[in-house]
Length: 572
Image (cartoon, rainbow, N blue to C red; front, side, top):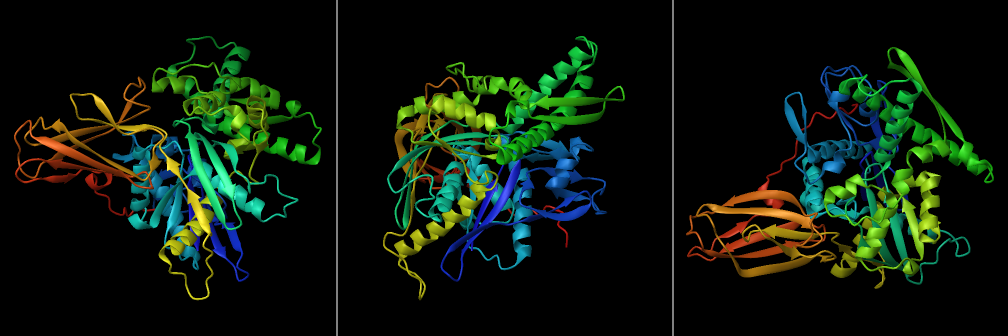
C-alpha cells in the first residue's frame, strides 16, 4: 500500500493507493475519525487544529489533546486553548503558550500527524513502508526540517518519510484521472510536453509552480522550471478582509464612532466576524457550485447567503446578508496587482494579492505567459469561481481543476509513491516473482529551491552556499575561506533570500556548536554541505587543527528529536 498525507494549513487529508487484482491502481481517501459535538465520527478531512482540553469537556474524557473538527468548534467556546494555522509558522521560532507549556509549529503539526498515524494503524490492512508528506513548493529547508521533525515526533521513522511538493502531487492526481479516461474524453493531451502553471491556493498558503509535464505509456516526467517564493496568502486572508469589511459596515450602520469601543472590545467583535466570514465563504461557494451545476446561465453575482451572529454586541445579533458581488467587493484588494517591487520580505505580506504572486514567479524565472499551455488551479480556494475568472483573464490560458481540489494533493502523494516504488525496484532490479516491470516504467521528477540558502560566518556578511533555482540533491564545499573567532566553538546563522544582495533577506536559524577540543582563534576551517532530495540540509565543519575535528552541525542532528507521547484523544 502507498500512503500520502497532505499536511495542510487548515485541513489535513490522508490517501492510500494500491494495486487491485486486475493490476489497476486504486486511490482512495482514508476517512479520519475525530470527535465532533461529543460524538466520534469519520470524515474525509481533518481540520489541522489542536484543542488542549484542560477540563475534559469533550466526550466525557479526562482531558487531553483533541485534533480536528471538535478543535475547530471549540474556537467559539475556548479560543485561548485552540491552536490553528500552525503551518504558517513552520521554520520559525514562534510559540504558543498553553497551560504553562510552550509549543512550536512543529509540535502542533506532530499532533496532527500523530492523530493521522493512529487512525491508519487502527484501520488494519494498512501496511506501508514509507509515507509521502507534501509541503508547498516554496518551503525552504528550515520549514521542511520542521516538517520532518514533526513526522518523527509523531512516530514516523526518518527513512519512512518522503517530502514532495504539493503542486506536483495535485497535478499528478489530475494526470492519473485523465489516464483512466478514453483518449476522446481527456481534457489535456500530455503525451507531448505541456508547460503548466500550477496555482495552489489553500487555506493559508499560496503556492505557484511552473512545471513541464510529459507522459509516456508507462512513465511520467515532471520538471520544475519555476517556483514562487513562500507566500502566506490563502482562505484565511479572504476571511480577514471580509471580517474587517463587515466590522466597518457594522460601525457605520450603527453610528459607532472611532474611540467608542476599547481595543479589546473591537478585537472580540472582529474574532466573531472572522469565524462568521469562514462560514459565509463556504456557504457562498457551495451555493454557487450547486446553482451552476443546475443552470450554467444563472446570475451568480446576485446569489445570496444569510448568516446570523447571535449576541454580537450589547446582547444584540448581527444579521448579515451578502451576495457574491458584495463578497468580491470586500476582498477585491486580494486580486489587484500594483506591480510593486518588494524591497523587504514584509512588503509581500502588506501587499498580498494572488496576481502579484504569479507575476513575480514568472519574472523571477524569465518565463513568458505565452509559454504556458494551461493553468492548473487547486487548493480549497480554487472552488471559488471569482478566482478562476481572475486567473483566466490574467493569464489568457485555459484553467483546469481537479475533480475534488480538497483531496487532490493527498491522492497525488500516494500515487507518487506507487511510481517511486516502481522506479526504485527498476533501479535495484529486485522485482518480486510474477511482478512485471517495464524498463521505461516509473516517474522522473525534479525539485528545486525557491530561495537561496546563505551562511553568516564571514564578519557578518552572508554567503550563498546553495543558490536559488538549485535542483536537489546538491552538495558543495567552501575551502580555506573561514577562520575561527572563538576557541570554544562556532556560531552559524542560516538565512533565506534570493541572493546575498536581497534586502528582504531573513534569518531562519541560529545554531551554536562547541568544539571537542579548544582551538586557537584564527584557526582555519572548511565547510562541506549537502541537501538531499527532501531538501534537508547537512553541514559539516572540518577544523584544520592537529585533531582535524569534524563537527556535524546539521539542523536535524543538532536538535535531538524523539517520539513524543502526546495524549491524543482517539476513541478506543
